[in-house]
Image (cartoon, rainbow, N blue to C red; front, side, top):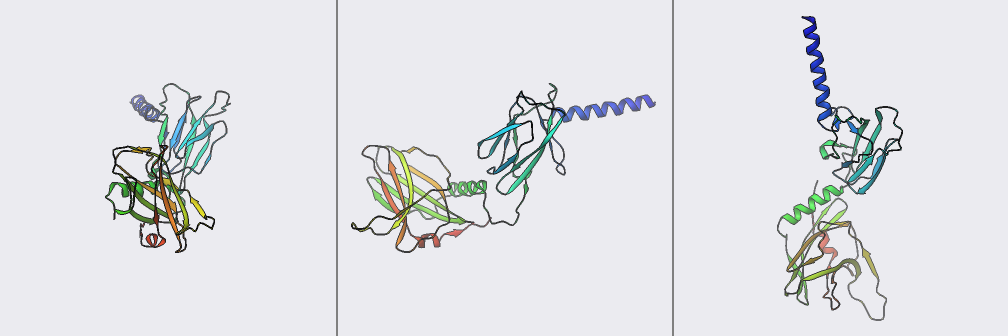
Length: 279
């Protein structure tokens, strides 16, 4: 009878160990640092829900950031691994942190997945009361703005068969979100050369030097190179202020030699009227 009980316990233990091995790289509960299995020379990717600002990679591993949200790590062939536990991998985002215990296991029966999607719920918030807005949150807000209809659709300028439309302005944290659109009323497709933002005086006199301050957007939701009839995008700028005699000028230019360009203004009073988004 005792032998049967002992055999049953051993079978259960072996089954539990096998399940942990074949269920993927990660094992461990939410109350402890999860373990990640990694094999020599196989590349492992961690996909974060926000921009990665810092990583601490254990000795014996190498890694880089091929994209702002993606960490790539591996154990090179030349690495000398003395034991199963390699070290703790730390991934720091804009507002959240995640750590993994890296475990070396080159056995063929141990499952390996080349991509680990961390997810917002999988990271611990390090500044729960901060007013900082992450890039992931900006993208989410921008996408929600684009999915909904324009707030106002205020036509600002019409030139060369192109009409510029200011669909709305929102503010969140230290950022301004501009919902901008263009309508092509001709049958000639518009190939975009560039979209510039700059602050200039409302009126320029010929005898004076033009004072222009270029503004580089933090991000744009879509990467559109050309459009046939309509173009709409959400641009994120850092919060800025400028006096009444200056304007935020937005210029769309075309790649053609006889390129059609159109410029329209946004007043600071327009920005002051923008609705604030609370997150």
